[in-house]
Length: 170
Image (cartoon, rainbow, N blue to C red; front, top):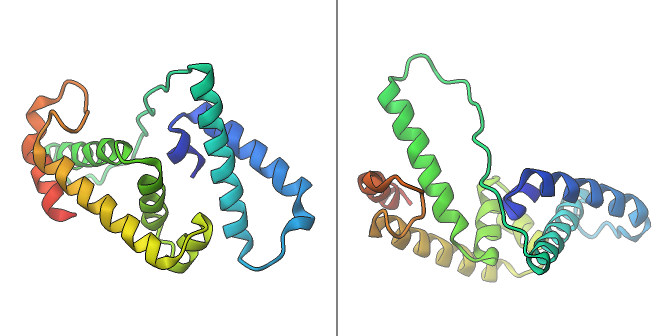
C-alpha cells in the first residue's frame, strides 16, 4: 500500500517503518472497532500521504518504479509475454493518472478487499466507495480508449491497439 501511494521504493520503506513505529507507540489507542489489519492499513496510508506532502513541499521528483523480475510460464510465447507485460504497464500508467482518492480506492479493491473493509480503511461509506470506483473505471476507460498520447507510457506510441483492448476489458 505504501508503495502504491508513494510510487517510490525508498519512501515506501520509510513509510512502513514509521507506520510500525506509530502503531507500536499508539497500540493502546486501538479500540477494536475494526480489524487490526484495517487499523494498520489506515496508519500506512496516512503516513504515505504525509510523505507525499513532505516531498511536494521539498520539491522532490519521483523516480519511476523499478521493473519487477517475474518468472514466466515457459508455455507462453515471447509475443504473448510481451503483450501481457505491455498491457500491465499501460494499465499501471493509466491508474497513476487517476486522482489520489480514486487511485487509492481502486488499488484497495484490486487487493481483493471487501467493499465494507475498503470503506472502513478509507473512512467513507460504502455508497461513496462505489461512486469512487465507478468514476475510477470511467476515467480508466476514457484514458485507455483515447490512444497513446493520453496514457503516458514513455516513447511507446505504437501501443494504441493494446490500450483499446484494455479499455474494453475494464
